[in-house]
Image (tube, rainbow, N blue to C red; front, side):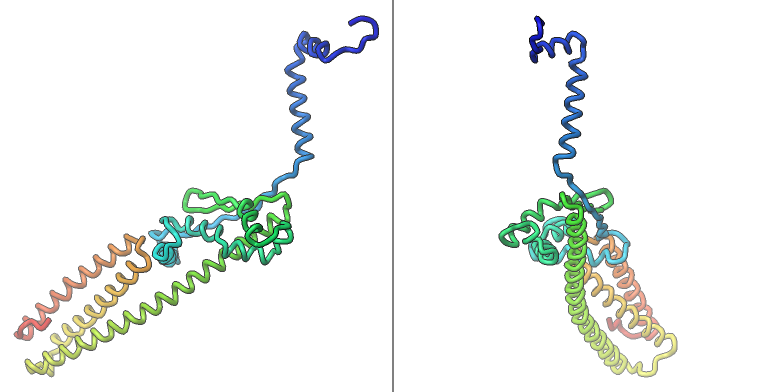
Length: 279
């Protein structure tokens, strides 16, 4: 440099390069910019919660209801999948939950949107669902406003529970109606069986059976009633909880055992009374 001539950018770069300070200069520059951006750019605040819907094959209370809800949703074309957490994800991101959150928190005005649909689209961008191991569903709500993030997370959780509660309640009423119809069928079959037994006893004049014969008749009636009730349980399980394969196999095995026992008691009864098989 000559005289009082101010240094140029090139002179400064050459000085840093010769003194091997250029790398440190770049690092310090990037660090300064990062700190500056951290203060200038708005921060994202995250509020989250986790849900653990039980698998249909688990032994947890309510697992069969979850399975029934999944089967019902699949039959109506509302859901395609197998895990309860996937169904809960669909509910969280549904319009029924989203619109309820928007209305309760007045998000149309807070988001400065034209209508609920526009607010719903913005709300969807705030929600992130993350499946975890063990069928756990993590839900994260992000926003530059920490209070809004917390409020949306709380309302989303509340509204999701409300939708699930309504769905399970409606499912329970449907199951109860079907069960009442099945119970009437069982009562009718038992009455027919009792009438057939009475006609059989009258025909072969066994109106005053011995203690042993009466014991066999009582056991036979109990086995037939248990067989019919197990059949109803199996039909209900196949209809409302088709994913519960283990339970279905257990019921089928129980029915096989009952059927074999009924045949055994019937043969024993025929041997004791010396009359043809009436079953």
